[in-house]
Image (cartoon, rainbow, N blue to C red; front, side):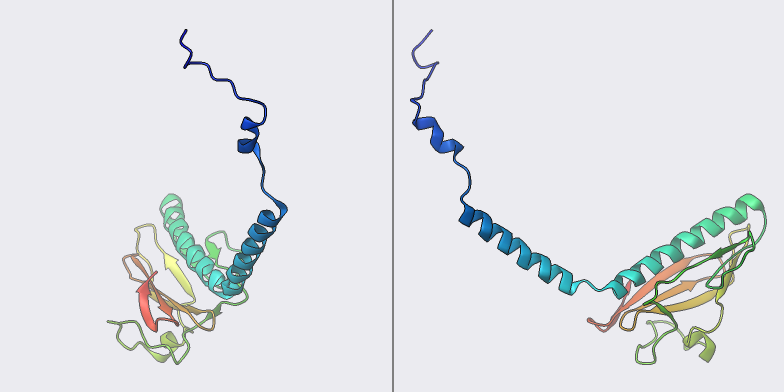
Length: 174
């Protein structure tokens, strides 16, 4: 055995690497994390979160309706109206999410000016999905006071989601 393979440390030499953090270092780290938490919570907006949840619920409800219509061989409705019918999937909106498009928000690009009822979001509150993967063409606007969600459903069952970003003042794909 060579002398270089085994090394022995004196009692005091190994203790420097085992030293912990001081109370001052811990206090500074906790202060920084507290400031970051306050900044993060102040920028969190429950209304925007509810609009994203409404988008997710609407998409999932339509997917589920297409599957159920195909499996059962009957038309399935999806809508805001709550019903006790087994062939109806109700959509629940958060309390900060409202039906319709605010007048200050322009229509998405390429969209022809629809009838006044569609613009205000007062028509087609119920979507009917058939077993042949067709649907009643519909246009829904949901808003949280600032941002707007536009769901366009073609009669062939194709869904397109657009979102109006108030801070960017433009429509983006959702």
